Image 1 (tube, rainbow, N blue to C red):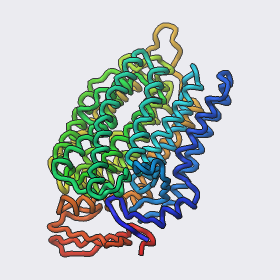
Image 2 (image 1 turned 135 degrees about the vertical axis):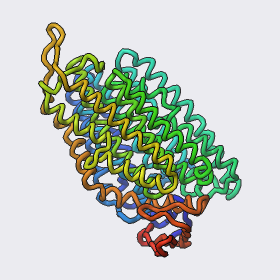
Image 3 (image 1 turned 90 degrees about the horizontal axis):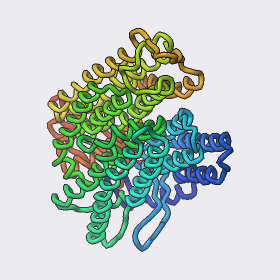
Image 4 (image 1 turned 90 degrees about the vertical axis):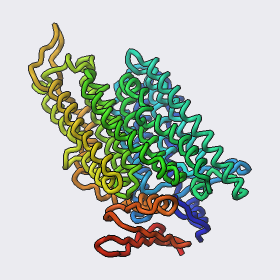
Length: 562
């Protein structure tokens, strides 16, 4: 029985009851790393092998559950699935409510893939017990953030991630790790305070209108907001997301944090935590504040494009290989922001896909840079030269990953950027044209860095040992990433067919609420777009009129609705 609907899909009481009787995949996925972290904390400090084995087993366990969620997930359904809802503090409307849809599904799966890779690629030898505990707690916080349907629960998970990252950078980072860790924590914590105020304000407004106190985003999406309130609440949420991502000009903490963090810390910061910010924009900004999204879209598009160009230019003048990748990450996140605020289904699908793609190739780049650092003890590009001669396999892997980051067709970076630019061109042509320059800049600074590091004649200093080739262990760590980079570049359809229905639901909500002409994914530029949601939405029917005629497009959003 469907009792209501929102931008986040229908609210189905019978679905929640059935979800509670079924195996709680989502809750288990959050609790497993917490439980293993507690187990690791109880192990003796000297049992290094047992600590590492337990941490890896816990992380792989999360990956197994994520794979089961992918298997159970019904493609073509744009609503939330496997919803787990339990009352937490009923008088205040708090609940433990988790759900997964096409937007969050592959971000959760990406998180589950990258954490065991980060643990396997970590070289931290001091206090592995504390390091493993912090990594597992960070994994729980990230997965909980992607799955939360309760705003306060999301905020708690979102903020919980700050503590493990602070200790990972401060405890195992490089020379300026204390400064970088403190800067990261202060920036992100201060910005999140604005979001907390916005959450409470939205809940109180909803309570005043309905008499119901709730933090459930599916119900809060139906709150009626004035234009001013909509914009102010949008800004309060976006402040936290823009810093966490980071988005220009709220990025100043990221080069220091990425540069000073240990290998695993850089991987998790750029590969996973940055996506908490961009995911928050797609999930909460677009879902809760449609009027403000349309009003402020040109501003956010401009910031995204500036981030693309600025990140590319600053990366091109870097002489530190790790900071070069950090600024490159800023440029790629700019593409994701542009896709989110282009307000077309095609661009938004590309933005969600690019979150996953960016996590994969950025992780591989940071791991390769960590391998170089272990052999040479420096990130300085001028001190690295001619590595290809003694490490051709490493050079080859670096080439593949670098080309994916540039966006070469056949690798995963191309697909997301193409969809973003194509979708943006439909509604915001000049922003798309300027953003395209970012691809050219990426080719400039990455190819230059590759030539400087791997070409030329190697000249070891003094008794310095020759540069060692990639080991089998290192190759096994990188193999899943390279495989996914190639697979998603050749065949992204399994992701897109699950992402698109949820993206279309968001676009339809924006269209109904604030914007009359937002094309769905894969649709032509239209003169008029009329959308209708059934009161009991077993399907979404869209009538599209264009110069070539009109056609009817039906997309199933809720399986089994009556």
